[in-house]
Length: 236
Image 1 (cartoon, one colour):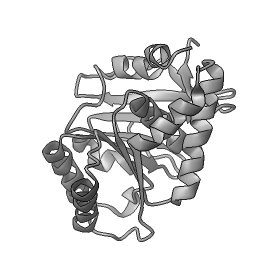
Image 2 (tube, helix red, strand yellow):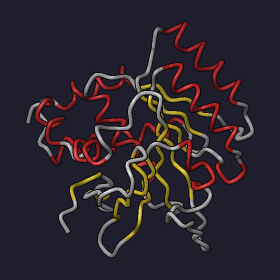
Image 3 (cartoon, one colour):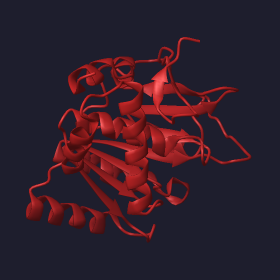
């Protein structure tokens, strides 16, 4: 299969359709689940799809080190290439590497001003301007809405879309009246899209909780395959 056909048949097109055309510039979206359920895998699959379309991505991690994230990207790409029988996959992969930049912050108490300064230095010195930013391991448990508001303002100013991952309590799943779990619900008004990953017997379901303030979202017919760790269509 050629790259263009892979892009066309990607389940990410189903995701975009289900959230009214995609996340969009200036907006924040979040994948939330308990630890180890598949948040990073979901972000990496979406990032890889973005890169295949020759759009640049910046992956900011407060958790995994760069080498671990690079392995995630390689694993996801190899599974995609295998599943879709991608032609000339090595050349495609080599080209993808020019579309991605990874930033790792060991200190979770780093200020947004410092993060923004890092972003400014990168974009000015390398001419690398991402269209989508992925933020993994952000400490939502100890954050306040004002902190996420800074990211929201930045997304609007830089004209980027930003996907986050947020970890839920392992033992005590606290849902509000909208069925949105803590700590994500504390930032409800700042999110354009909220997706909760819900483990089932043979797959991980995508539970769409918010989609651009369009009322109660329809079911998002997507799942995460625990064998390949790829997003896939769910016809169950």
